[in-house]
Length: 265
Image (tube, one colour):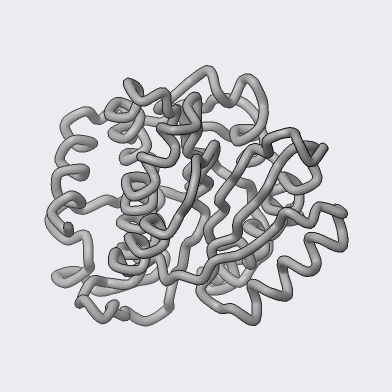
C-alpha cells in the first residue's frame, strides 16, 4: 500500500463535533490522507490522536490557522506541497456578541463566508493539479436574511442567529459562483446541510440537536468521496441527495455577493 498514492483531503474546523466526525469517516476509507485545519493546537492534536486510534490510519495530520484571517490562509496555502484532491470547508463560528478580527471584519462573516472563499481560491492551484477535484462547503438549511448592504451588521443590531443564517445563505450562493468559475479547472463545488447535530455551535445558537456527529458527517463525506459527489457542481445537498436551493437561483444576488467578497482582498 505504501506505493499507492493517497487521495489527500483538507477538513477545516476539524476538531469540532461535525468536523472531527467528517475527518474520522474519511480517514476510515481506504487510500485517504486527511489534513485537519484547526485554530487550537492542543485540541487539534487530541482530535488527530483519537482519529488515528479509531481508524488505524496514521496519515492524519493537522495544520494551525485562523480562517477568519486571509493572511493565515495564504500562508497555509503557500506552504502546501503537492496536489489536493478534496477541500472540505467546514469551519464556522457564531459568537453571541459581535466581534471583529484584527483586520476589523465582523468575525462570523470573516470565518463562515470569507474564510470559505479564501480557502477555495488559495487552494485552487493545488486542486487543479489533482483534477478532477472537489470542494465541499458545509452550509445549512438554517439560512436566509442576507443583506448585501450590511453583511457585517454595522447598521443592524447584531444577533448571532441572524448573522449565522445570513452566513449560511452566503455560503450556498458562493458555492454557485465558485462552481462556475472553477469548472474549467476540473473542480466541482457543492454545498450541503450536515444535519441537526448537538455541538458547541448549535448550543451557541440556543439549540440542541437530534442527530449524532456521525449522522451529520454522512452527506459531506458522501460528497467528498462518492462517485455521485463528483458528477454535479454548484448544487446543494441534504440527506445524500440534491435539494432545491432558491438562493443559488438568484443570479444577480450571487454575482453581487461574490463581487463584494472579492473586495475584501
